[in-house]
Length: 130
Image (cartoon, rainbow, N blue to C red; front, side, top):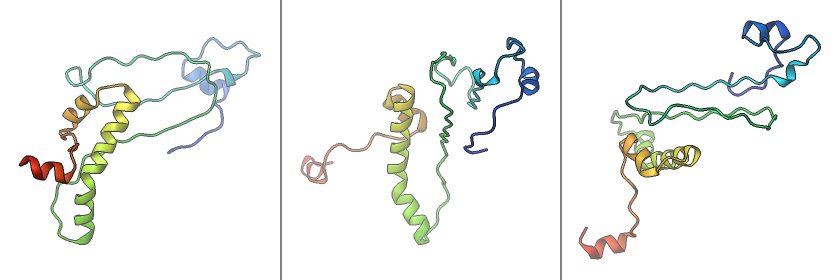
């Protein structure tokens, strides 16, 4: 579910998942499951995933979804609003992904097929002839 904090799994459920190391008297609260969904192939993902053990035992769930922009044309007010906000939204997505992964934001933008936003103000662009 999205997101939820379910009850801890029973000993039988943990055994079905391959948890063999719990002693008979041990509590299942010391077992943590991680679920990660990533779609990629060897050509398009920069490195393999690696996991690191942590001392953090808090129950936390997050969801981050990248969506492809809608490409149809609509001249209704909602479609115009969507188009006007799209570049800002895509840049925010690129910045967030770069921040979460440590990847270069320029590489993320390149992968998303977007260009960096213009740094100069409108009057700087006006007087430079752009």
